Amino acid sequence: MGAIASENNWYYVGAAFAISWCVIIGYAVRVYRVMAKARKEYEDATASRPRGA
Amino acid sequence: MTAPSDLSNDLPRPGYWRWFGIFAFLFLIAAQATGLITSIPDRDMGHLQKIMYVHVPSAWIMSLTFVAVLYYSFLYLWKQRENDDLKAASAAEVGAAFCGLTLVLGMIWGRPAWGVWWAWDARLTSTLVLFLITIGYLALRAFVEDPHRRAQWSAAVGILGAINVPIVYMSVRWWRTLHQIQSNPSTVDPWYVFNLRTNAFAFLFIMIYFIRQRYVAARYERAAELAVQAAALRRN
Image (cartoon, rainbow over all chains, first blue to last red; front, side, top):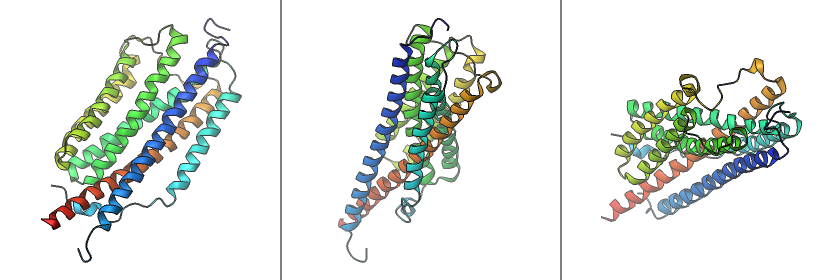
């Protein structure tokens, strides 16, 4: 085993995978919220449109 | 000038994309679990090598998002279609997330491997510059209200950011850097290569899903904006 191979490396590996999932899940939640808000705004805006307009 | 009225017509529906999203997440879980469980420790780096399965795919995917930004920015400047601007913006936002992730994962790798969290070497610095350009791109879009001007300016910044991608890639060859040069699959254990490629595909599927969903959200945002404007005009 080389100089930097150590059991402590699992902490770094764990942190790297955990952060990756935080970013991916975090972005998925962000996109979901943006989508839900945009759809609601669109539906509200089009629902208030008078007939024939 | 763009004809924005076509945006509210034919708004995209989730359709099969929902299933694609579920598939992408399940594939990512399977790829990461396989990499973590089955990959044997490296002779020099031990288990630290496993960070390669998230850091490298994240960097590759980041580069791909900027290729998409470049393509749709040029397309917007050429055809002046607002949908191309929205696609470029969606790719840029996903690119910013992956660029930030790449930087953080690189720091986590760097601390045990190099003894420092950060070094001002060419690869790290050029990636940071790319990240800052992308943040600038997103800030620009938030501050400019006129859609045509916003699209034109952000296309210019997007192209500038994408030009930085080959510099990031070649930086380890052009300059003497702490960051290692690109590995050759023939010099790496085949199982490492398999896990790396599997995780790269998983990140690719996630990227495609995110860009598509963000684009759909952007279409709805714009359609709502237009509907509100139309309602205000009718009232006047």
